[in-house]
Image (spheres, rainbow, N blue to C red):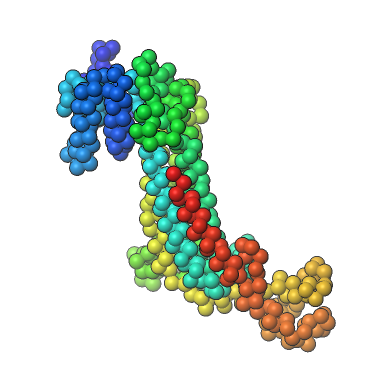
Length: 462
Ligand code: ARG
């Protein structure tokens, strides 16, 4: 029999029962639900809304129930609809009449708002830690590659020389922002909604602040109507996760490119790549491709929830039950990606010689050639033109800027002397780019220090 069957004269249709039931996905919030109920029951006892001895019995029984569920000895029932009613039903089965007192001064509307916030909060903290571990991997790798010269690209055309260390620091900065965004989200959402009742609070003299403290929330929600209707925190987490997936996807795309025969900058470890069922020579970057692909589903989860809430009048509507699968899927997907991506990158074999060779072709030092003339007092626009003409000459004659004879240089501009070769060597191009944030090894070392410092700061907010 349903907990709410009192005013009904018929049983719920079987199909409606299944349609309505959320236990097959919200059972994962059993721990949040029971901890919330323990805090609620303790408060009810402490302020005298229910008898202290009965409150203690409820708490003790819920504690055992929590352990039993963890041990896998408890069966949930779809006729009890959701995790909240399953827990209450199980409690009452075990405790009899006393169990029926738990739901005093509470509604499933504020209960689900609480459970879902607790779940969201735990997910933020856990994903933030995963990303921080990823940053550790990238920072260590960057330190190993301070001097590994590679081409930097714009429009996917070779542009200027950088180092692999510099590139890996760029990835780390993207991830640092993700950690920072998650921490912002955590700060804003850290409010305890229980005590909002169905929508209009309660006539019982509850102590919301005691429950808040018990459950470790920073603040109380301030309006009961808003508290039961609000899913902004879930939308915010989904937004953070979407942007994080965009970053993982961009990294994946680069790994896919780098491991092609055409680039050849890196080779995937056998343990992090897969073969083809027909082409024996193939070594495919499936992990990176799947991360790129799964990005779409996380965006879908965000779009789903935004769409669910857009037309909802205050306060609670059953539409809100659709919030959970979207968030759970995004959390699972992100955690799954973060369980493989750091090691896939850590186990890549980079090919410094190939990267350097790529950086030495394509006139990546043409800007440096112009800068050389600027240092000899030529205005940049003019120097740019001279450098451009020399690049064209090289293309026509098969020279590189490094091999073009000094006489030819001097034919184009008398400011050239033999120090030009030193000025445009790849090492000079990289080592002299000492502007803050640039690729010179000492600047990259600073970036690595910054990344490690920021990461520690951000991951420890809360
Ligand atoms: N399973 C419901 C959900 O996820 C719990 C709240 C139900 N409240 C109600 N009044 N039907 O949203």
